[in-house]
Length: 149
Length: 149
DNA sequence: TATTGTTATACTCTATAACTATA
DNA sequence: TATAGTTATAGAGTATAACAATA
Image (tube, helix red, strand yellow):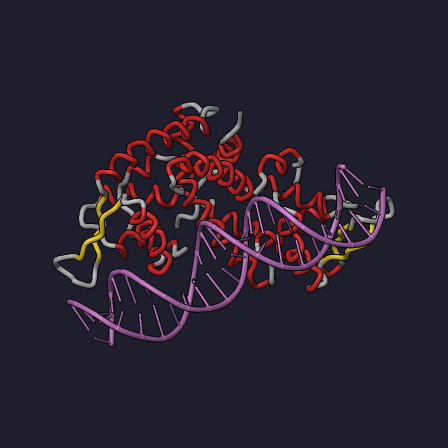
């Protein structure tokens, strides 16, 4: 999406009264910036989320990874292959279940994830610099309540 | 995305500290609900946004519509065709520029948009019912500040 | 030359279904 | 029979490039 040109032309609209519309634009701006932030590392936002999750969850298998991130089994295959191709992750058969493949970061993966985390923290600071620390916390809390029962 | 199953499996993660991650899930939940809200009318969220914008902007031509909503000219064609196929919009050559096509809602389009607006208002109430009126306002303001210079 | 709308194309994201090998 | 991973496929979203008609 061409965010900048579209935003330049936005005027007052009934759409502006919908929180969903503000949410859409905020999401677009943030994902566009995150995408270009990670691109120099050869990663897309989803790869970053995968690597964080893999590092945090020893013995994680693919199905569990997909479940955590909301990615279906079939769609996970090319994503994992991308990380394998860059030798950022290892894949090994689970000793307790020979159907399952456990994922682990390689040393190279650990190192690149550190770089990525530093870039992502800077990205968040950049995108949220108009919000105080208190407002950032509140934003997270309010977002979590959207669509809750 | 399978939101429900993924959310059920989410535990504490470094990702949770990123506002972008909360934003992503909120966006997914909201868009999924908006999609099923509008589906009975034969519309997707983008069609709804197009119809609102067309109604609000007399003499609107396609390029301007795309610019307002962040949709490229080429991608707009099948979207406009969808609305034309349902006879929800008229398309007529601009008298001032014979290259340009002006869009206008038909009577049928006006009526369906009223229905859609009622459903979307209920959808927003449903998604935001855990937030007070004050919190909803604040959420909109905070979202608008994301990615601002 | 520049712009409007169109067509063609490609890549990503998401979803479903069928297949295999294990359990 | 159920589950883990894979493959195939299809629809939606987004991006670029080329073209005809008009400005």
